[in-house]
Amino acid sequence: MRIITANLNGIRSAASKGFFEWMLRQDADCVCVQELKAQQADMRSEMLAPEGYTGYFHYADKKGYSGVGIYSKRLADEVIVGLGIADIDAEGRYLEARFGNLSVISLYLPSGSSGEDRQQVKFDFLARFYPHLAALRASGREVVICGDWNIAHKEIDLKNWKSNQKNSGFLPEERAWMTQVLDELVWVDVHRTLYPEATGEAYTWWSNRGQAWAKNVGWRIDYQLATPTLAATATSATVYKAERFSDHAPLIVDYDFHI
Image 1 (cartoon, rainbow, N blue to C red):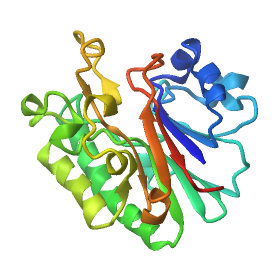
Image 2 (image 1 turned 90 degrees about the vertical axis):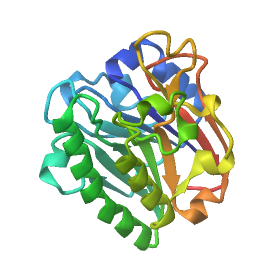
Image 3 (image 1 turned 45 degrees about the vertical axis):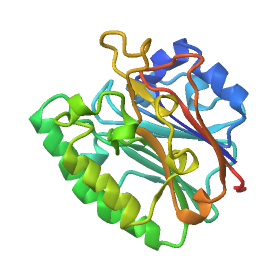
Image 4 (image 1 turned 45 degrees about the horizontal axis):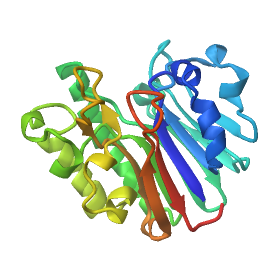
């Protein structure tokens, strides 16, 4: 089973840069996308249902903002749109597709980089999302949560960690929350577990400022977190950088697991 997660920073922009042609060559079972920046009326046929795939989406209420999707080869048995929390769901941040006992989730966790107000929104999201993560772990289902978590967990996960300790995405509170998710709830960070020492090759996001992409001054903020049994079947994880569809790069994970 191959699962891909990719923050598109605008699905129309990514499509114009060849994302869907690339995606169809990957032969993935599921592709989770974030930051659609589109409503249903904006979506062309290749975006709604690429050849061989069914698309499921959670659009934000606000035009040109947020939104998540899942493309799957197999029809989902059930699709859960949103968390059932009105202000979070208005931003289109959570979509879960169920295939038998497997749940594949596309997640777009808020960024707090635009200011203190949005950082507080992010902290509120973390506080309210944690019980949902606990419930998923207790459900008995195999689950993989794919997406842009907007948190670099450890110093190894970004190039300039020393100068970013007071910046959103690497705040002590955010990193401590991620530690709780991994250590107390026992979710598994698949890429980091496969490649404990990986640094620059693991980055998934680069600022558009300066020469961040050219110099690989990046952050690892896109993850696939999985339940332990599912994570143990992961055989490889790669960040695709040969083409650039967004300010993020797709994360591809292969699992010895069948939908």
